[in-house]
Length: 265
Figure 1 (cartoon, rainbow, N blue to C red):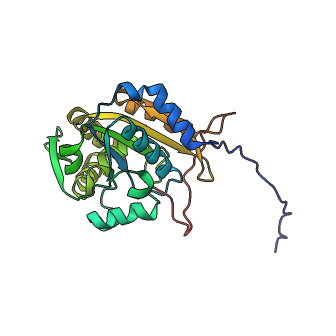
Figure 2: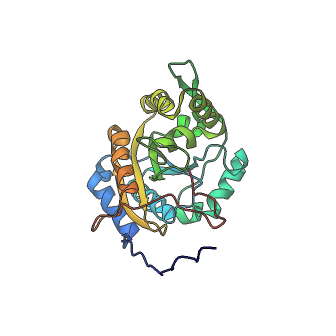
C-alpha cells in the first residue's frame, strides 16, 4: 500500500471589495442619473423585487422609493419572481417579507397578483406575458436585481436585469412560456425573441444591477438606462465573473446556500 502523500496547510487570500455605504452610493447614482428632472408628480412607478436573498436589496429599494416620493411620484413594489412563493400572490408577498422587504421598511405599497397580460408575441407566435399590475398601473418601471453567473447555463447575460424582466415580471405563466421556449430553442434564442417584445411594449425607466463579493456583501451598484440594459449587463457580468480588480467590486462566483445547494437564479 502506497503511503499517503505529505499534506500542507494553505491559506488563500482573495480581495473582497465591499461598498462602505450602500444607501449613499444609491443616492449618488440617482443624482448622476438626474432623477429630479425625469419624474413628474403623481406618476406611478413600479419597482421590481425578486425572491433571491440579496443582502442589501431592501436598502436599495428603500432609497429609490424615498427619492421618488420626495418628487411627488407614487412608487409601488411588485414581487417579480416567476412562480416562486408557491405561485400565489400571498406567497410572493410572504417571501419578500422574509427578505426584509416590507411596506413599512421600503416605504411603498407591495402590489401582488399572479394575473398577467399578453403584451405581444414572439416570432414563433408564442404569447409574451407580463404582470398585469405593471402593465396597467405603471407609468415607469425600475428593475432591480443582482448580476451574477447562473448555475445552469452560460450566456452573454445570465442572472440579472434581463432575466428579471422575462422570468420575474412574467410571473408563473410568463416564466413557463420562457422556459418552454428555452427547452425547445435554447436560452440565447429565447432571450432574442422575448426581450425585445417586452422592451418595446413597456415604459422602462432604469435598472439597478447589484454585484456582490464572495461573502454575499454588496461590492458595487450600477445604474443602467433602458437602451443600455443588455450591453451594460454583459459588461457587468464579466466583472461579476472575473477576478477582483483593485478598488472594484467585481467578484461574485456562484455561491452555495446554507444547505449546500447552489444559489442559482
